[in-house]
Image (cartoon, rainbow, N blue to C red; front, side, top):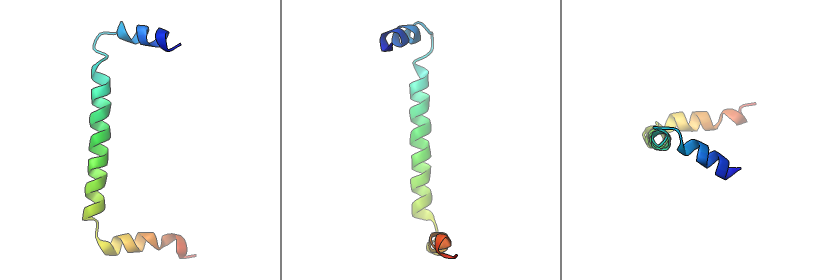
Length: 55
């Protein structure tokens, strides 16, 4: 099954750009998430973390 899929995908021109695009999207998302976590205000974090306990 994998050999069939690999052979089929190798015949498509320009297919090699998609893994690079997905890597860039993945990297950008996690860098942005990392940046947001370290720049978030502490009072916002404590407010959001106590939401499940407010019942």
